[in-house]
Image (cartoon, rainbow, N blue to C red; front, top):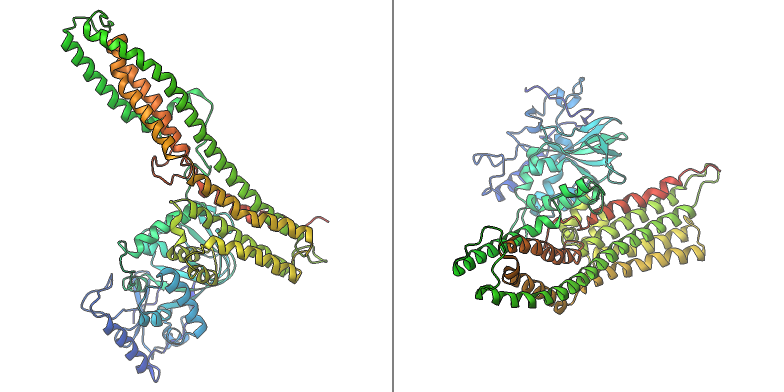
Amino acid sequence: MAPAETPPPGGKLSIPLALYFSPTMIWKQAIVSFLSIHDARTPFGYSSASKVPSFLLNEGKLVVRHATEYNELGSNDDDAVDGDSDGDIISDAEGRANRTQEEANFIRSNIHTDLFDGGLPPDAIELLPTSFDKVEYEKGTVLMQQGDEIADFLLLVDDGKCTISIDGKELPYPYGTVGRGTIMGENSLIYKKARGATVTAKTDVSAWRQSLESFQYFMNIVETEEGEDEDIPAQLLKIDKVIDKISGTKTAYGGNVIKQIEPNRGWLWRQWTGTILQHAWKPTLFNMLVTTGFVLAVQSKTKSTLAFGMLPNKSDPVVARMLGLGMAWKYTMSITTFILSFFLSQAYNLWRDVYHTARVVQGKLSDINLLLACSAERNEDTGNYTPKAQALLEDVASYTRLFHAFTWASLSKKLDILLGVRGIRRLTCRGWMTQKECEILSSLEPNVQPQHACLMWTVTRILKGMKEGAVADDHVLRDQIFERTTSLQGVFSGIGGKLAGKIPLAYAHFVQILVDVFLFLAPFALYGELGVWSVPAVGILTLFYSGLLDLAKILLDPLDKDDFYNNASVNMDIAVFIRESNAGSTRWMAGGQSLPF
């Protein structure tokens, strides 16, 4: 018998063994029947010679994979029944085969629906719970260690709480604390990389554990929807990147909405990434090359013998004709400068308006949670929130977080992947919502978006809490809370309306043509006065006029929906708004948990 291998730190499988119990052959036949249906497939990590997944059956013995070895235990092995006094892993054959209906449904609803996107064949769905072992961890146990290259299992939390830390820093609440229904460690299995975070048991934890081999088997038989041009891991990677941003694990500007500046002149001169110079240098260089070619052509035509840097002879017929064009061009400079400056001012006003409205939304969300926290029912003896008041505050905080995230996703192309069913399910995997909430949001009517449902949940839950006595049923409080909740959708709609009508096409079209014509004529208009010096002069004019126009366009797209200039320093990192509101959703509840009077 192969030696049993020690489980993950603190983990012990609660497992009796007996796959060949009578009538076990019925179970074996069901497995063989399932495998025959998928005989044409060769799952990742399996040879074509053996279609039998080793986590289910291997010559009458159950094979449980842990780390790099297998622990094969026969049904008559005493160790398999009594376990190992040293705490080694023992087989869970009977436990796997006899999951209760509640346990099986819990695994299927979280793993099949959320992780495998509901894409497993029906027979595979039935067998999915048999690939999991029940494990238990004591408080303080490190379940997964960031940077660990041996990532060969995932966990589905059944009971208890865990903390998530990255680079030694716990993620902000609520995403740094996860509980029942949360899937952990799946990213390392999906993307075949080291652990990206450290998971520690905050309380005693029981969980369902699936091995890498089992996970790969099921992942490789997931059926994608017709017409999809990406596999499941590729789509999950895109969704995870977005969730990382709004959860706080990835930031664009060090946690700020926009890139911050230092007033120091030297610091400002050294900047390049995200500046207009980074965008405008190409048209500037192009216009300077065109001007250089024109200067050389004119000097060749006039057979100029002037030394380098000398101004051209204005009596020359060719040069004299250009002087008239130069005078006309100067008149266009004034009107171009005025119109472009006004256009830039209008664009900046829109940018400021969107930023201000985003802060107003944050304030209203914070007010709702503040008013509820101050009015929530308290225990007369301890002064702490009663259980039903605590539940109300947590529910409203969760619903406002979801409303805020989904609403911004509806306005930003970079976040809109969260609005789809796959995005909603992935959010559930990452602990953003419960399975029941996921099911409701995934089955909404086409004309109802997730943020609409979440706002309804918020208002209805507050009304229910008032009726139950979890919060004071006072008409003034009700009016204050409802004023803020009912105005949220209108304020957000205002942002969408402003962006949809940000500038008339005729206005932008006219300004673009005006600036382009002005810069196109510059090389010909300036030569008569400046000669060879028209080359740097055209470069400076192109840099500033073209740069100002590009700056205006970027300001007109504060959420970077048009991909005109990705990651400009003026584009807002709206994930910051979401993260700040996430933190604020529980700030007042935590601050008012205990009172000094």
